[in-house]
Each structure stands twice: as structure tokens, then as C-alpha cells.
Image 1 (tube, rainbow, N blue to C red):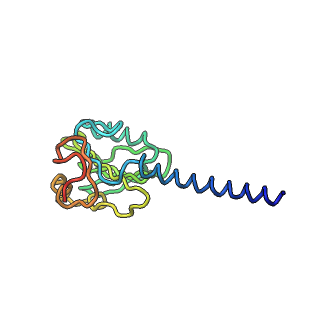
Image 2: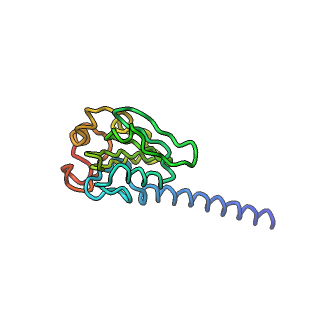
Image 3: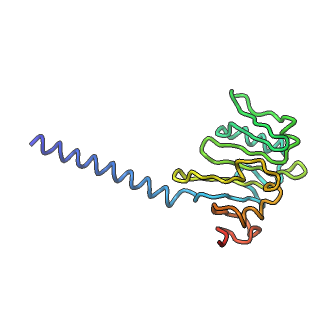
Length: 175
């Protein structure tokens, strides 16, 4: 009787584990934001509001403990936090209009400034099964950064989601 009971318990444990894995996969497909590029031009994303100054954006970045790296373009420079000390405004940050921020959770933020204020925020989200990213987030290419809408509409392979109809469609562009 003892062996029979142990085998029933083992079957119950295995079925419980399999069902938990199934629920986790189901949540990943249904409840998590889809992979792609999110473009914010109207209100912004969470605490990063459109129109904020570079100094205020840097303060908001410092409040996000998951952001430990900032890469700026023109001049190209990388800033990495190696202690608890927050980022400080450097000359390269002040003069650059493009900031890439890598988040430990896998998101990459691209802050685009005009006249010292946040004009646009792009967010790259990749779910765990998608390895490929976007060249837009990996390279300080001034041609791409100056004509982002054209690149997103015609050349980007990831889905693009807009906060307005400024991109033509509010979801994936036609192919």
C-alpha cells in the first residue's frame, strides 16, 4: 500500500509541475507585451514624459535601478554604473541628442532629444524566444537616427507599435 501511495503522489507532483509550466507559457503568450519596437511621441512611457529636459530624463533614469548603462551618440561614449553612485550629466550626454539605455530586464530605451528636450522615446522589447534585435538599437547611425520614421516603416522587420497614428498604422505596418 505504501508503494502505491508514493507512486500516486509522484504522478500528482509531475502533473502539477507540467501544468505550472503550461500556465507559465500561456501567460508569456497572452499577458506579456508583444516583441517589437514601441514608439512614443505624445505623452511618453511611464515616468519618461515627452518634453522633459535631459537633466530630468537623467534623474528618471537614475531612479530605475535596472538601467546600468547609457550609450550616447555624437560623440560616441558609453557610461556604465559600477557602484551605487548615480549617473551624472557629462559633457557627452549634454551634447548628444541620442541616448541608448540598456535595462537589465532586456529592454533597450532610445531617447531622442531636440533642443535639449525629449522629443521621442523608442523602446525595444524582445521576448525570451526572440534573439534578433534591431540595427536601430545597436548602432549610432546618424542616417537612421535622423529619419527614424522612414526606417521603421520601410526597413524594420520587427513589429512597430505607435502611441498615435503618426506612423501611419497603430500596429504592425503592412508588408
